[in-house]
Amino acid sequence: MTCKKCGANIDTETKICLCCGFKATSGKSKTWLWVLGWIFIFPLPLTLLLMRKKSMNNGVKYGVLGAAWGFFLIALAGAASGSSDPNVADTQQPVAVAHQGQTEAVTNAEKQAAQNNVVELQVTEAQKELVRGMPNKADDEEPDAAEQAAIEASLAAAEQAVAEASRLAAEKAKAEKVAAEMAAAKQAAEANEQAAIQASIEAAEKAAEESRKAAEQAAIQASKEAAEKAAEESRIAAEKAAAEESRQAAERAAAEAAEASRQAAEQAAIQARKAAEERAAAEKAAAEKAAAEKAAAAEKATKAANNPPTKSIQVTSGLVFRRNENATLSINGQPGVQYSIEVYYKSGKSTAKGLEPKVADANGNVSWTWKIGGKTTPGTYNVEISGNGEKIKKQITVVES
Image 1 (cartoon, helix red, strand yellow):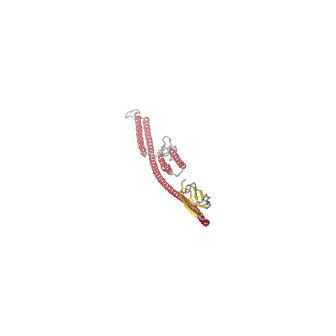
Image 2 (spheres, rainbow, N blue to C red; image 1 turned 90 degrees about the vertical axis):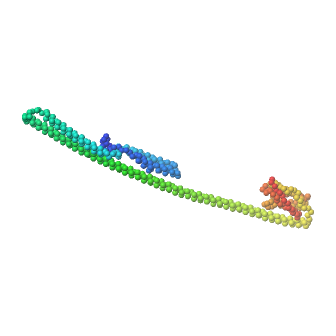
């Protein structure tokens, strides 16, 4: 393990740097802050936005969501692995450690002073024992020089031993006091450093929270702008679709009107042509009738001049006929005289086969047979029979077949 402060090796058991006194402990991970930050800043808003976008292809939509959540899980795994570093300092170390170190230093100094007193007492007792161990003499007896020298030497050695013991004890106590003060100062510095680290962490957490809120606001603003843009695009697309639909409807209406006009023109042309044909037919019939009447009048006048009439025209057959069947009309007149017949329907003079002029036989009988069309309207129609200067008008009746 390496010290993060000075770079020296740290004892793995005590986890204290022997050079600078830095204490490294395992810290607690802030993984939950990463999780909340990533959920509220990146993947969740993106998911909501994409799921709301109906116009996007489903394959593209789910592909983007898969990539975003995959990146999120990879980042989360990296944050979890980084929190297991054993060199991370404990950010929750209380400041009371410094006070505890000072208290321990004072206690150690008191213990050392007590030990020094014990040593002095032991040395004093040793001197006393040394004196008691010497031979007793009378008070008036003077010790000899050797004894006196031995006593003095013993006392000097004892005093020197006491002084040396006192000096060593004082130096030891001073060293221990200095060590205790250094340990207390180091612990105080560590406590201050831990407080500074804690303040830095709190400031960083506050900055991260502010960044998260700013990111949330930015995401909300971006979502709002995206929604407004999508609404504007939808409105423009709807207007374009409505304009296109109106244009197509106008084109269809114009085409239908043109087709109706064309059909009306064609129908009018057909009706005009039919009217012209009917008018030409009527004019032709009128001309033919006039010519026939003129010829009949001339013939009648000629016959009247040559052979005055002796017998009138008599209809000898029925006058009721059925549609889509042959009709036969018979008369009796002057033998050898040519008689003509004209049948007038609603459409004009009939031109059916069988209505040609015919000559009466020796008995004066003449018959005309023609086909009445299936489309002839049931009703009463005029028939004119003329010959030998005479003309009669009759009515035939057409009934359902």
